[in-house]
Structures are given as C-alpha cells and as structure tokens.
Amino acid sequence: MNASDRLRVAAVIIIWGLNFVVMKLGLQTLSPMVMGALRFMAASLPFVLFIRPPAMPWRYVVAYGLAQGLGQFGLLFLGLQMGMTAGMASVVMQTQAFFTLILAASVLHERVRTAQWLGLLLTFAGLVIIALARGQDAQQMTLAGFSLTLGAALMWAVSNLITRHAAQASPGYAPFPFIVWSSLVPILPFTALAIWQDGWDGVTGQISAMNGTAWFAIGYLALLATLLAYSLWTQLLQRLPAATVTPFSLLVPVIGLLAALIVLDEHPTGFQWLGAAIVLCGMLINQGIGLLSKLRTSIFQPTKSKKNGVKL
Picture 1 (cartoon, one colour):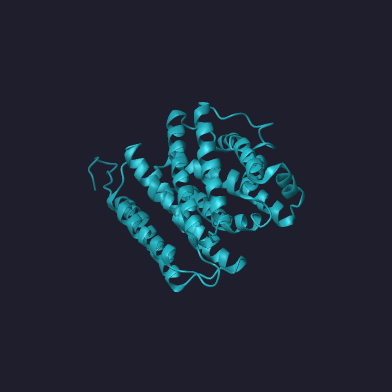
Picture 2 (spheres, one colour; picture 1 turned 60 degrees about the vertical axis):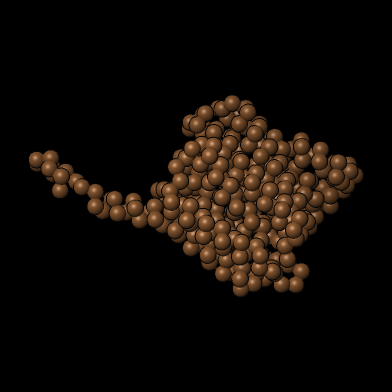
C-alpha cells in the first residue's frame, strides 16, 4: 500500500466510524426501510442524470446493489432499530473481514498469509470480548439486533467479493459511477418494504415530519458514507487483494465506540475497551508483519554495480 492508499483507508475509517451514530440519529425519526429508500435516492437520483453507467456487465451492478444496499443496510438498519447499540454495531459489522477472508480464499483462491490468519484470529477474540461484555443501564445489545447485524456483515462480505469479480471482469472501471448506478437498485425494494411495513400514510407522514437531524443523516449516509467512502473502498479493492484491504476496517470500531460515547452517551465497559485494544493488536499483527517484510526486502535487496554488473 502506498501513501495514497493509506489516506483512502484513513478517510473510510473515520467516515464509517461516525456512520453508526448517524444511523441511530436518523432512526429516531425514520423507519429502517424509509431511511434506506431515502439514502439510496439521495446517492443516485441526482447523479445518474449526468454520470454515465459503469463500463461493465449489468449483473455486477445489480448484484452489488442488492447485496450492499438492500442486504447490508436493510439488515443493519433493522438491527439498530431492534436493540443494537451504535458502538456495538460498529464492532459486530467488522466480522465482515472474517467472512471476506474465507470467501476470498475459497471462491477467488486468493493467497492468505499465515500472519493474516493469526491476526484475524486475535482480532476475532477481541470482538468476542466486546460482544459478550454487558453495557451499562439500557445500553445493551439484544439478541435480535446482534443477529441482524451479523447478517449485515455477511452481506458486506458478499459485496466485497462482487467488487473483486467486477474488477476482474472489467479492469480499471471507475468506482464512482459504479456506486452511483448500483445505488439505484435498492430503491424500489426499500420503497416496497417501507409501504408494506409502515403503510403509504406512514411513509408520507415520516417524510413530512423529517427534522434537521433526519435530513443531516440522509445527506451524510448518501454523500459521505455511500458515495465517497464506498468509492474509496472500491478503489482499494480494485488494486489490492481483499484479504489485504478488508482488515483495515477493523479500526472502525475504535471511532464508532468513541463517537457513541460522546454523542449517544453509550458507556462501554472495561472489558469492551480491552476487546478494542486486542482488535488493534490483531491489526498490527495482520498488517505489521507484511510491512516489516517489505522493509527488510528494501533494505537488504542486493544492488548491481554500474561498472561491472556485480551484485553488491
């Protein structure tokens, strides 16, 4: 990873870390399906008028829109509504790295280093500690919320694999048009589910009652969390193996837990903070060994003498 890649990773971590708090705020006014429909309307409809469709088979656009849009965020919004705290959601969603690693190794036959497996196992232990530790007062995770969020993480992993397949089928495709046009796909399913769940009057009533917080949530989720962050994420997945890119998302819970503490007054326990520290240790093992290997190679790589061509 070069310096530009690391900047992309940092931007994605911050945007997605704050993302869960923004979702919770939006769900105070909107139901999950209405928020999903509005999110992807705002992420696609203003832009498809002047952005050309991505140069790739449409099956990848539709598959990604269903997996990432309807699957991942439909389940996540429901989970947040049904008792999942924002901080814990930012943690549980990172199980996508484990799902992606397994799918990438089995489906795409990507090579996974031993250090990556060890790092992810340690990170998994940290996630288990965080998930099992109880929160204070009413800030506790429900079984339904946990299960739905875990399903959302699986759908995120599926969308990662779709992105890798799209990159193989259409090398060098532009990520932004891909995100914009794939955001069209979940609008109708979200709208249909919203009408089925809330009724037409319920949907129109929610939209007419939207306050500044709800409008901010839709704008943040559409423009930053969807268009910007997922475009950067897709660029990384285009250029680098999924097993290298996805572990960086394990830093998202650090931002998510802090943001939930400050904005929503969610108080993690000592065990949850311990789990977050273990997650970071797993990240250091996962990525640090690879970086050390590259550094060692660059330092000790033999060079050739310009005069006689002998290796020095």
